[in-house]
Image (cartoon, rainbow over all chains, first blue to last red; front, side, top):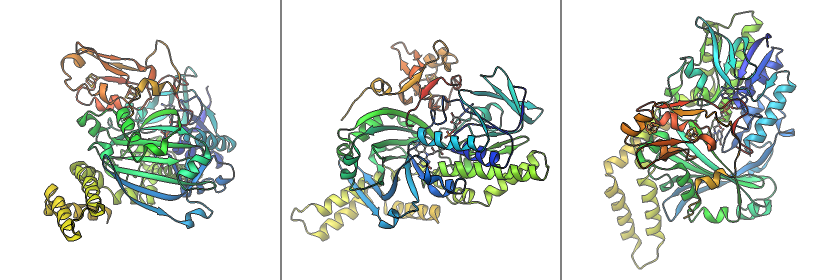
Length: 432
Length: 97
Ligand SMILES: Cc1cc2nc3c(=O)[nH]c(=O)nc-3n(C[C@H](O)[C@H](O)[C@H](O)COP(=O)(O)OP(=O)(O)OC[C@H]3O[C@@H](n4cnc5c(N)ncnc54)[C@H](O)[C@@H]3O)c2cc1C
Ligand code: SF4
Ligand code: SF4
């Protein structure tokens, strides 16, 4: 392929699709390369889709996007081996269109999004792994693929190649990922009749429920579990920091088995047919882990740039937003006839700094560190909460005042009063 | 407690295996045997691709690989894993993701 493109986008996940769509719509000549058999065939998500980010790119996406259920109820469970203590929030306002959040199945969603990208005029080539960036001095001028037997050239290459970003690492744009900056998530999908899901979760129509879980289920590791309702299936998964998996020598597969066997989870999965087991990394290092995201002839978007807000479980929306903003920066430069140099592309970083993407990530920049050095948030507290609830709810002839005393004692016994106050302060500072 | 084997789970997945061309390899097997006491790849690979042999050796079979990247990142003490994506179109094929 001797042809030259304005822009090559590597990857057809949400970030690459958002970038390619926006660029192609503006009339630029775009080539998108994807290593999977079809877009989505390599990609894994929970998956919750936040409408806002997609709406800004494809306002009428609800007309034909493959959406599973809109979410009307969020459950947060703190768990020990036998119990959970939960906060459930369900509101009918979430049940009125336009809906704000949906569950999706990524293999289907990515295919749909990619169709829109191609309709907008981008050329997509699948089953093609980009093996290297082609450099001229310190400028990226194209990509080397394993398919077309050669090289393809462009004025700009956008790396939308996901968390592992082999390309950015090989090119020396960023160092190897640190086990403390990524989480490994494993998940399964279980199919069951729609009516079963609706009766089990008290749902009707296309409404859905999500459950987020913390506590003993992660065996002392920093992480969370999740259970999401799709139309005719449930997704169950758990993710923890890689540094913790390594330190505690826990098998991710067994971790998921144990979660599925939890007495509060098992009945929800009963009778389902497991149809896929998947694993994927999530960049959770936050603001401080963001690498260099632009240079001469290149830009980085999505997971490849570590754009994930782990506190709010937002990733795909940041991927789409960074993809869109990168494209808008490029379109702006092209319209002014300016070259894609690092100096000019710095406008991308500035635009991100002024958007919710960086503002949110900055807000929580200390949180990953706090959780790392304070594992009690994932171990001691859930345990204590459950014990406290059990003490209060067990009717056994002991007066309530004595019970309160016992609870207070158990809290300060496991963690000093000073420690408890310190923790409260750390959390307050991090969320402030 | 359910104890399904990981192989049983992988059986549900679709793969297009690039026979004879593994995309991941151990750079120096001696390091695994003689210098790596924790051998965390054998515990933490979600697909169980790494197995410990009795004599301290590690055997890697990538057929069931989920392409997550864990083994490469977690081997940070020795950086002993050579890791690439499979050739275009090969490897895991998620139906749902
Ligand atoms: C278990 C799990 C649950 C999650 N839950 C949520 C959630 O509920 N809500 C949410 O918003 N986010 C969630 N996320 C995060 C979200 O999935 C990611 O942030 C998002 O997918 C990032 O999109 P991306 O386009 O940057 O990367 P990806 O989706 O990873 O896409 C990268 C693409 O590039 C391709 N590629 C990579 N390298 C090459 C190469 N060399 N050549 C050619 N192609 C290449 C890949 O095949 C892939 O298609 C979750 C993640 C996981 C793992
Ligand atoms: S962690 Fe690395 S060095 Fe240790 S056994 Fe595994 S591959 Fe070998
Ligand atoms: S990439 Fe993931 S699934 Fe594949 S061998 Fe490494 S750890 Fe196992």
